[in-house]
Image (cartoon, rainbow, N blue to C red; front, side):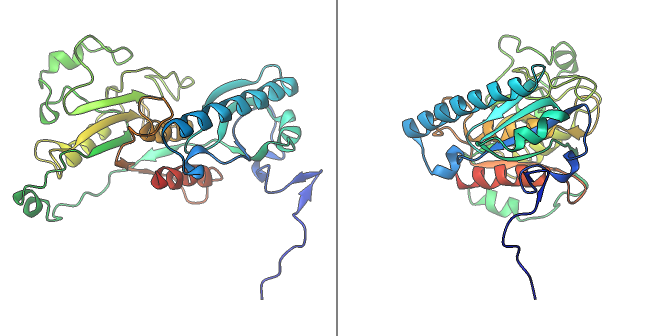
Length: 303
């Protein structure tokens, strides 16, 4: 039989469920996700102006919490925040502040932030897509966000020039006039920058799939909506959440990318959300931050 505790386990006056056990003996600066108690916009089932106002309300609540975090650790650094798929802030903070932070009235959960790995070990060589395309179904009107290493929007299979010189001359940290967005890759954002994880995430508006870690996102995008892809009529959003210098994907960027996919223009109204989100990645089973990304996926799916 299964026995239930009448009260939550506690350690040094901290609810076990609020501060992840891996942080209890932590020392020095820690990068954590702090989930707040109030429901995220997606959980409220709101759209339009009501969703936009709810997003503003949660940002204000988060700002108040961040003031209290800085009172615990004046050197605490805010890395990112989300309000739609998760009501959460990501901070770098001294471990000594974590017990009191976990007991804050507005805090539901404090956990480590971890990262994932790109994974495209298999593709489906035959799924009947040609038969569907023959009936005139090409994915036209469908918007797909590819959360990956970015997309080479200059690639010939994705409607670009295909000229290696154009790619070589493109600075992946800025958008050169007339290069992006394109008719196929209609939007996107880079949430990691070009040097992560060698240095902290440095987001920029250009999601070009470049660097020694590049190519994976372009491969995925070509399978989805390239000229010979499964749905050649679909539009793509390049959401760069993975490294340009390796195969790792930022746990913070992934949740930010999920937030972007449900609200690309950032106005909080959600009427511009994509139809499909693709993530071809993974991680060792049982990491403490899996619940947070899974929750963000669930909330995005609701929308």
